[in-house]
Image 1 (cartoon, one colour):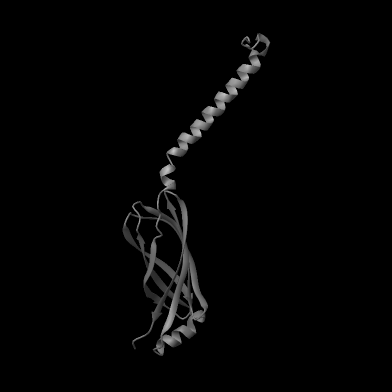
Image 2 (cartoon, one colour; image 1 turned 180 degrees about the vertical axis):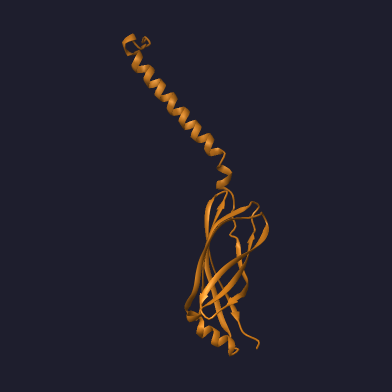
Length: 173
């Protein structure tokens, strides 16, 4: 038979270093795996897109140079967890022209399975809206388009949602 081989005394420091490094690496790997397990449920979380509905555009103020509008949106959260919105960017268009745009940087929490109404102020230049005003006063239909995006924080990470809603307006003068 063969005799077992033992580490000689002169190789001990090297052997201890290898064992120490191996234990350190195993400890690090185990720590990362266990930390990852607490977030595993996030990988399987089904995040449904919130629904954005344009439900009203209200005239706030009219002057010779500006038109101040209030854009009203309703955001529905179909998820079983809250969504936190950090920033909204939006643009109002009509007749292929950008009438105005804005950014709303405000932390807004939308509770699980609920709806939230949000108001977005928008100032338009009357120079950009003259043809729209003429069509409105003549009783013609005009399509107003609201485009934008919002970034939501979810348990599964950030989600950017783009929206594009069109509403037909007509005066009843």
